[in-house]
Length: 135
Image (cartoon, rainbow, N blue to C red):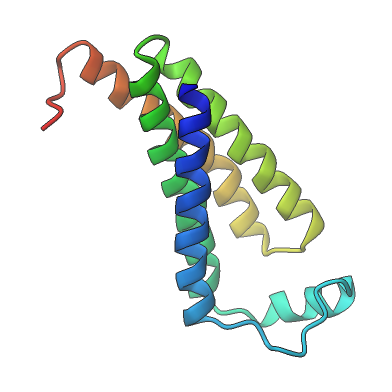
């Protein structure tokens, strides 16, 4: 149940943050998302900020979802947060393999997502041991 709650947090945050990105960097109405060549050319034109919004969504949702799941589970915080991180990592890797992205973005995402999961587990473990205050 804890993992499911964490994944709901992930989904909500990714959707919310990427929706803000869609407002800031709207996708052209005539873009055919099923045409891989057209999509590749479009991604090449995106500004840095568009990639940073996506990276923020993935990393923030991994941390928050992992933390919530680990706190709800109350045991094995690194494992629970790690599971959330693994799900986001696999989803991110799938996204990166299907849509070409700049290499810096791919590397940053595939490093930052597991680090966010680890940080969530560490914070949850600290809270469980009473080393970090909940409020």
